[in-house]
Length: 403
Image (cartoon, rainbow, N blue to C red):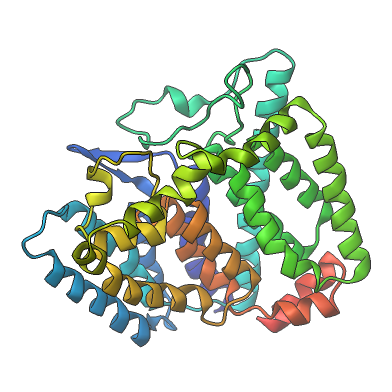
């Protein structure tokens, strides 16, 4: 019976975790719109999981908040311009979070390790992409040759590390952008430090993170690992700090590292990548007329409006701009229950990634990762684990007992 449950429960989630990485760039074109393949696969996999898992059900709190949000949004949409596609797209992305499903202890650990293996594979690919260029080869990205009808548009799959360089940023081939690659690597490092402490893997992740030349992964790693470090035993804390310092020192002293560090001054320019992501979206939302600030401009209008400076909307400013302050409060409470209900350092890290660093509200590549990974990590007692366990083998035994 246990083997049967294991098979029924794991393969849809394994497929989701696999797809969240290796199928990120694949999309289906329908008319003038694109639907990422990962969204279709997520909805199908969720249906299979709910049908095969007898311990599944619905979160009453979430369904109350979500449908209250939809009710207000529908009322505020009257006599406004809006995108029906954007509105129903949001519903399709977030309805799966209304359901819960539980797994056996060993299944959770097995699935988390599979996810880390997928990240490790792309880490080696990303490092190879960079090294191959250093020895005179061209940038390797087979997916770039696929038709635009089958690949996700609107993203820079890679670009030069600087305007005068021939070296392209590593994207691990399968990630939408080097930035998203770096964020997945940071999440991998957080999970490894929290649970398994396989230091050789952490070194590989750090090296791959460096060759993405992306600041978002570094920001996520710094924000997430600070609370973890204070819970580690002294020798493990020193080991991680020394490894990190050596790798960062070698990187910072190189020509590539100096370019990456020079981007810390980007916030001073309204046209910079930093301002586009972290400053301009909030300015646009807050500068709206009072009625638009309260009730929103309408779903999809953030993508249809031309602004005086470049804007890349993350979750919160997009919610505020399109749906208004009142519905946004309900949706933020909905998100809080998703990420913080029995949360821990991994779920907090995923929250930071989702809210501030990724493509945000309507990016299935990120949202579907949250849907498949959060149920595996939310109920693990990391505080006990970090105090009691030091070796990977003992970690695995302890985690199986705790989950």
